[in-house]
Image (cartoon, rainbow, N blue to C red; front, side):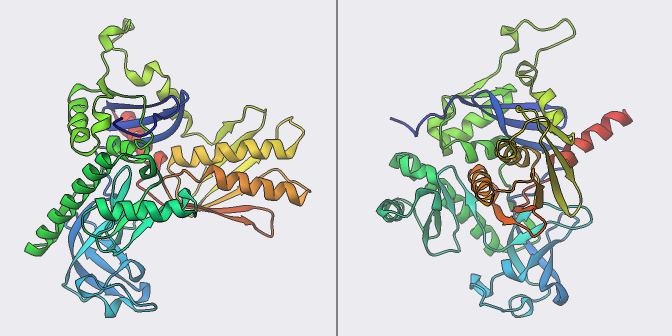
Length: 413
């Protein structure tokens, strides 16, 4: 046995389309996650820099850090550390932690939005399918998704025996992963950290020390623990590159990477048949730029994105039972937030329900629906106005912004 359990009819489809590199995750034939890189608007998410503190912003309790990219990042005191990586004391202000002109090792935790530069942290994390290396930490933390039984303690002890160094976060997929895969991944992550640390000690910032994972690798890291049945790549060079990465980091996935051969498909007269065309993914992605999402039971969602928040309105249509509409909407809202890469505050106006027990059931269903979201998502409950309040961590650029750039360029051409 070389890996974990094969996901339920899951596939990862990867292609290059003009300036876009896209990775789509399909479960049971349905699009569940989407990762996109834009060559003309590259994401810095996960990049590690040796930056230089430009100035201390006392009013923000943060510091602006020159990354050498032309746009400074903001490091909040909450994400800062003291000299030699000392953890910040409770209530300690940024002025006690950093000084102007100091070089500092930082990682981008959120891309720039609007006039704001990227958000930074000094708590470096290097993600893998089964493990996340947090080299400045000292503990082995186990995912809450694995429950609270003795298995958690046993798994933590197992990782301590396998993984070099300190500071590991154990993801749920590690519980069923064989030791060989855990060793390969932990060694690769630890080696990456040693390279970062050595480069930082040589100084010379601002400088980029590590590039965060691109769209195909993000898809594999976040969904490869439940081994996909196929990883189909619509670009031969990209397929070879990805297979090489798997050989080093995910050997059980290497044989599942295959280059899509359009010659095996009856192509239309106007040109080559593309992988995303065959699965009708381009049409589905296009719908993600719209505001209205139909529900199978006759209702619909209206999703409006503003600079401050994402607002979702649930319409019942002609269906009579508000709870049924809301439960279907909850699952689709969780899916839409992931596909659109919505971040920040989310407010949902569900169909009114008079039964308090139904409201509790809905909140529980919504919480379960967002459990597997790679971006931290929190459901806070009902406000006094009967609106459900949520937050979803910002990760990269929202889909509408990425594809809006492509549309603008196409219109100019």
